[in-house]
Length: 137
View 1: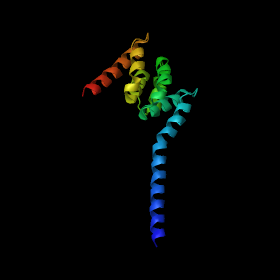
View 2: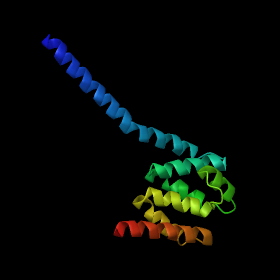
View 3: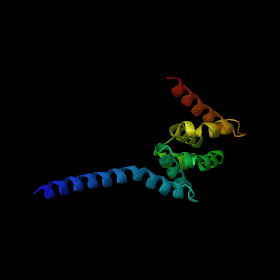
View 4: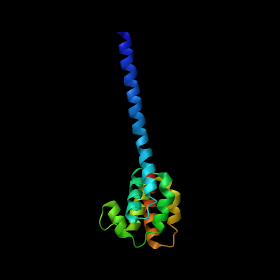
């Protein structure tokens, strides 16, 4: 009888540990999946992956997202389709993503804020101001 009780406790602990491991690894698995999708030649696919990676606050995605940000001129339709928000400009789209990622994106945002593309400069500066305001509050 005592063996059965100990067995149940061991099974309960093992099950809890397995559930915890799965829950903790889910974001890592999703991040790896979307990092692969970020390299897609299809703009809507790569933009949608960038949007998801922003939601995951993926610091590993920042360099590729910045590349897409700098090359986003004229791709407002792809950004709007990826975010599901009609009227969203590509510059605003990438500014939002980097803002969602948070402090790990600050050095990249500072770099983009000095970019030759005025749309990139405006939206990078906007995201930086949001992050600074959050840091002060």
